[in-house]
Image (cartoon, rainbow over all chains, first blue to last red; front, side):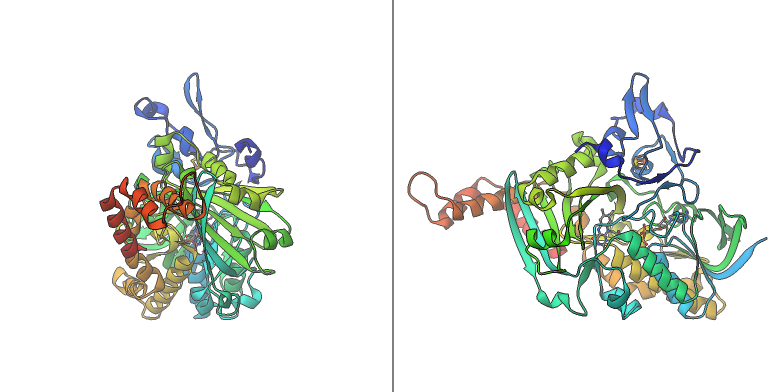
Length: 86
Length: 430
Ligand SMILES: Cc1cc2nc3c(=O)[nH]c(=O)nc-3n(C[C@H](O)[C@H](O)[C@H](O)COP(=O)(O)OP(=O)(O)OC[C@H]3O[C@@H](n4cnc5c(N)ncnc54)[C@H](O)[C@@H]3O)c2cc1C
Ligand code: SF4
């Protein structure tokens, strides 16, 4: 099963303000680990380097711990990933 | 306007709720702030909650909690390709009180725990993100939250904000996790009729099983697969080192797909319907990575304090969260009664924790994190064991050799010293 299909099963309450910002200045010296550790596929390799999209984020915090270019905060109260079962 | 309370708890997971419940029962004025839309919205686990601490906190929990299945069978599976060796540790007495562990789904379980705290008098506010701590003369005196009130003041603040505890870092109690001190868990929930689960897992009606699996599906990445039976669903997932995912250039979800392809796992989930996918970090630094657990006006409990034990076969976090939350609640009560919530007044928390199930377990398993980073454990040994046992049950061309002779030949190729060392270390740390 494809990850995209799995992500369709996740409930998100969209926060219009991104809770994660990335500064790609550190990408040059990096092994593109974000492509592998992010369980939601929020990081993608594009023609202009790593592109980031916060919308499908599962708020696991892996990028917070593993990527020095990430500024990470919680989305607004009640927003973001909202598990129905957990 | 600034509101004031006795104890302010950040986070309504098991750690926060246990702290709130304990303090509210002692008659204190308790407020819990939770960032999720509802309690449990942000939380995800394997998982089986061990019941000893839960039973201490809420003696009649079994009659009221939204528990999925009492776990009668704990199954350890070593896989190598299509081969699987399953060790079934069954105990029928676990079906009756005092049980041993129950499978749970966190939205329902956390919501119920929160209701218990509410019934004891705690106020639980959802949709409330705490951004910062208010400090005065080095003492935490409250929090800044994304709420109309803005600031809330309290005699004691309990940080039960989970593995990504930004607040414990801001309070200077904890450093950032080192990348190899965290594991990433990804989990899927598969809906299946209860009777199908009973039948496929060989369970009497309503009884539960917990599977812990290691093998070559991990591709050498430290971690493991798990499967837990719920009433009418299966929790299926892997917990893996995110740093090693990057090293191997594979995603956690791909490891999980490999796990589900193991025939012994595939036949359990077959025909089910995927109803949720999620991910969550696990703090796995162990005893050596424990932060400072208390300071002036502040206590840290549960995942925020890194209180998780992973023996490779059993992941324990919820019971440690409940236990440390209870200790934090007790310490807050004692400090407030003495009108001393300074660092010295709250130091009692560490003493209580020192005697608790939580810290005793952390200390006992302090060698597990280093051991569990060894690749041999996840590939070589499952293969070796499957090879050895295949020799027992299969007949090749030529005369059948006695088992001991085949076994000796299989073991000869391996580094006997490694094996002996790991066996010794394993026995000491698990
Ligand atoms: C895949 C996986 C499998 C696991 N399996 C098991 C298992 O089988 N058995 C077991 O015992 N343990 C297991 N664990 C570990 C267990 O889930 C955790 O140890 C446990 O949930 C920790 O509880 P907690 O209350 O400390 O933190 P959490 O449950 O994470 O709760 C923290 C709460 O704080 C809230 N919060 C965070 N920051 C803020 C803020 N700034 N403001 C307001 N609210 C905030 C969050 O929304 C959350 O509700 C597993 C973990 C994972 C990821
Ligand atoms: S928090 Fe987790 S899911 Fe969200 S972007 Fe970072 S790694 Fe991906």
